[in-house]
Length: 311
Ligand SMILES: NC(=O)c1ccc[n+]([C@@H]2O[C@H](COP(=O)([O-])OP(=O)(O)OC[C@H]3O[C@@H](n4cnc5c(N)ncnc54)[C@H](OP(=O)(O)O)[C@@H]3O)[C@@H](O)[C@H]2O)c1
Image 1: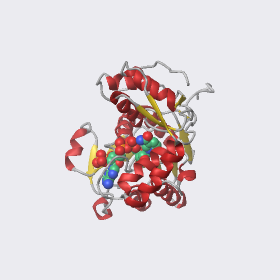
Image 2 (image 1 turned 120 degrees about the vertical axis):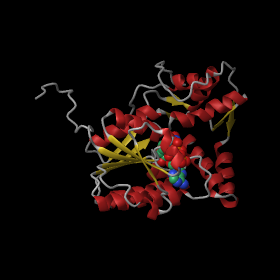
Image 3 (image 1 turned 135 degrees about the vertical axis):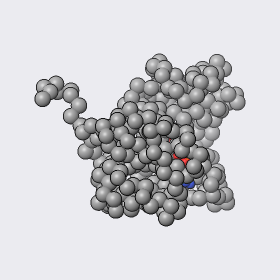
């Protein structure tokens, strides 16, 4: 028996049979890699047969539609743990947050209950509870959290800040010459890479926690993220500050005259940019490295370790 007080005594993931929903997404693909590395037997839920070919050969792919529960029968058979990174971000399928983030996950939960799944790891949002009455995405996600918490399946809700993939919007704006911020840009966030968020999800699965907040290792103001995006493009910073009240009013109007897939992402973006979005730091990937690699066209790999300063 180890006498090292730092020794990892959490249960091993080796040999666990896991299902990943949302496996084709930014976090989902990192989760599949992390679970394979941890020695798990991985099944992914995908909605199109051709998506199955995008995973390593040892991954078992189940094709089904979360919006049509009849097509999911059997997906949790012989599964010990479910990881759900399933949710609408940029998809334009004509379905609503309630259809996917709530009912889609609920369909998986019902199957997990029937087949005796031992742990359900669900990825929601930092401050999701506070935002549930004002942000449609948070409404759907927290409705599922309610169902999960009431379920007989042991669960943990992971609440990340914002992923590097979403911070890529700053890079896109900087590439176009000007970054728009809401307010004075002094609110803070510690964004997290998909790899570090995936590792946090696996740690959460192994722990006894029922809720975990996670952010990346570096805290930035939004202004600092904008400047880092310009630095990655080697461009002079041009930052426009939009009055917070104007942005909130614009989204309120859009919410009354456009469909959810138009106003929903903006509503979420403005909520995020008008709240402190810092969570306990974890991981080792740095946004500046991600920006450098993205602007050099090197894809999603995140390896650089140059820590930025705040402000
Ligand atoms: N992005 C962030 O900064 C952030 C921050 C905190 C929490 N989160 C949450 O973390 C989770 C993962 O985020 P992400 O950025 O990795 O998302 P993502 O890259 O957009 O991936 C979303 C996943 O959900 C699936 N999906 C979406 N709509 C679907 C539908 N109608 N039917 C079936 N599958 C559908 C996608 O499948 P396809 O590939 O087939 O479209 C994909 O596998 C989400 O629940 C998100 O709300 C995100």
